[in-house]
Length: 206
Image 1 (cartoon, helix red, strand yellow):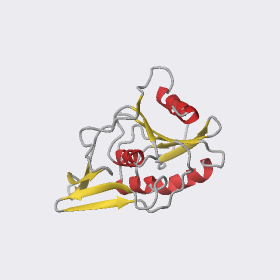
Image 2: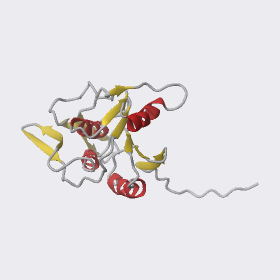
Image 3: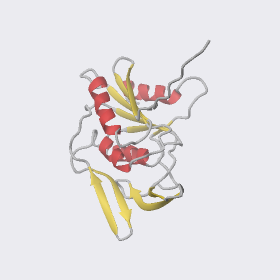
Image 4: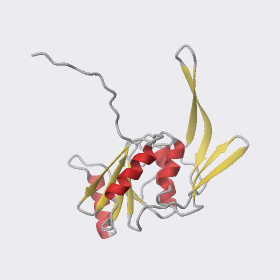
């Protein structure tokens, strides 16, 4: 039997969502891309309802990406002028603050992390936790507190180098240290124990 194969571009979404247990909005953020926010806005319209009792943001295995996208995502939870992160370069420091365009309801938010939660995902996680907008569940994050630029050369090679250090709202770098969750839960062999613990926290508050 003959088959015809057509080559097409396969696009993996940066964000996905679903409803868990009838009233918990679950968002999986795989990577911080330039179109993440537009994807997330559509998911919010679909999965945040008057019945929503809690929100889970899964940052496990998210290695980062576009730094500014993490600030835009955090905007959905924070109030105006709350510091999201600071960018420190030689001789200057820039603070990135929330715009006040909060969209999330006043329900518990849990962020799931593991040892591959890094860079931009750590910016988002630390900002929400420090401002009391989320509880972090999982294991310690990777600990990447620097940002890089990439220069491409005509021969196809490139040079990637660090150009700035980012700092969480408290000003203490997590580089090489990571973020220790509020509730440490290792992943079990059977089922998603971290996700189940997050649902328990939202339902019962502990």
